Image 1 (spheres, rainbow, N blue to C red):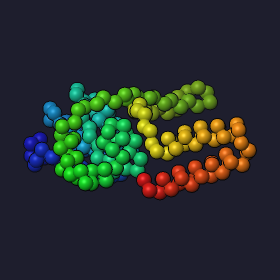
Image 2: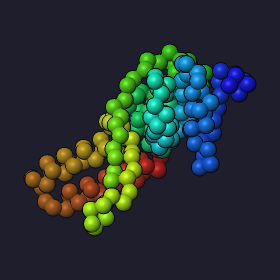
Image 3: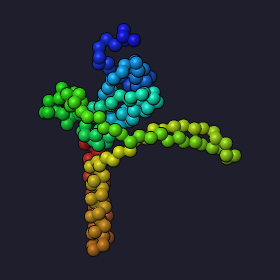
Image 4: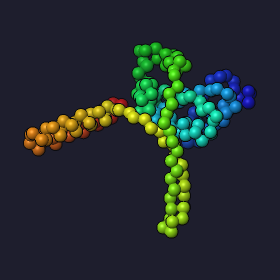
Length: 181
């Protein structure tokens, strides 16, 4: 085992050909190790699913460098919505120090078994999915709630065309916001 661990830091590129399992296998005999995921919500979920399948006695803590599109989980865990947050704040070295000193936060995760039955009631297929419970509040959601409330108030007191106009403005704002994030 020791011949594979050239240093305490190992990097594993995740792709369709190689998922997180190879890295987790390499460290499966190491008593305490940590995982740093560089990616978005999908990549983090992929790694957490792989950790869950391995049934570690003590699962490794996972930190996130938010490099995805939405990064909702990263925002909820206070790692930010993107790597650019760390520009001007010490960059990567500051981020790695923050990760080293971070407290572990437990996530509410559960396993859902999905069973498909045929028309006779016999099970044809079963698969399991792991899910996380966290609440993210993105700008798109907040803008949407604001405009829905605004339109509701205006619609009760003003003519029909103004709420339609506000919905069109909302649509433009959301599309602009999505293009810049």
